[in-house]
Image (cartoon, rainbow, N blue to C red):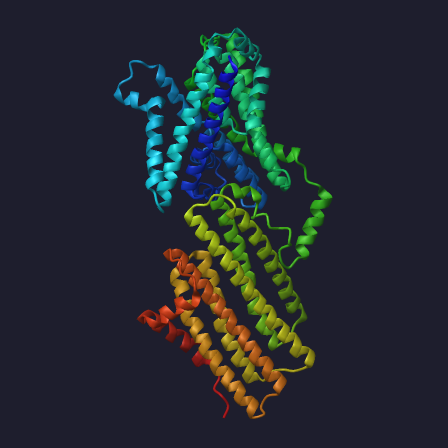
Length: 610
């Protein structure tokens, strides 16, 4: 084998890995993170967990990606350790799909194949799919799905071109005695397992290492007895990715990675004992025959399916074994429980849902970011709800609770901005890019609502220190407009959480009602100032409070505009432009909603004293 063959082999391997990466990336983008999101709705049924793990892995074409996501979900507390066991088992089955696709190469040796089989042969099919892929990419324009289909087809074609290049480069090895001796030495099962584990651990993909082994099988030098241990070792080697991803994670996430390792170690031990015992007892007729691509794919599938069937009934035992390996520190655990019981709001460190492991699947990372923005929205709502109660009765305990919750809002804002920026550095589909932009805007809006709640708190503290109290009439007016704004914040939060455009469209009529109420209350208060019914200092504070309250409703209106624009695919995100257009063409429904809110809040204001 010359240096030129080595260079060709390296180039073929590069094409093969590149094609696999493009294929997996295209399929993952087409799923838009939906495959991984399904894992969040996992049940305790081990059978369903295995099926879902296999299905997700078959879609994203990577058991490593699935297990890394599972480790992240366990780390975030989204998935329980015992539920993760079934998904990991299923992921090992799902990853065998690639090998079954690559076995199509065996059709090349079938000279009597019919027309359909001739078309299905990789030397015909791969170029055809590549041509379709490049045409789709060239004519796709702004059609995102068409681009993704084209990318996936092109990846499929490149994958097989890499396989062809590797097979061509290894043709001289067919006559090499030294090469045959190398694989003869690997008939020692332990050496074979070690070789398979090391190679797969280096490239971190069992699908890729199986493909390389299938390419090597074209030389005819690899026998079944040499290939079987290598395939078992390849399953062990793929655990490297999940083990690396668990570094820095919590104990349950580390345990999930250990489950992946134990599953493959135990499966390998069972197969080594079983296969070699049966061969010693009765002997396999094919034991020393050259293995084909189909034989490699079939044994890879058989190993994972049988191991899953054997170990699935003992999934709790696997989880327990991982818990024994990664032990809890009793003293640290009791201290953490005590700390949690004393906390009134989540601690700054508990933000595992924004796990860096999810960044490899932007759709899932964006979904997790939604969860944290929803927390921000809830904290902002709670703070606003509590802040205006302080004007009637100032409670230091409530003020402290508001400040703690405001700190949590700020923490989430910083972490979300950082996390979303990392997501934006990846390759996103157009819908993902729009979701990312929406979240960045909403973070600012909910954070500002929280800030205005703190402004109200500070005004309440100012009045309390000065010993000043508003009249019952002024308090009643303030609480009425605050009730309207509280409903606006609730509607904004719920509309975001449920992606409810009907609810979002009702926010602007409510915001306009709040504006009308603010104008009236400011006019009334100015009259009270002129009549000497209110001191200058208290009067100015009251006017500032009204301004802060009204600003909160403005931000709710912004949130509604962004949600509606995102859903409708509109690039127009200017709130004032949107509202102007809405008011110019007021619909009957808008007028009805406006009347409902006017009756509920504006007409509920206490009558002005003569």
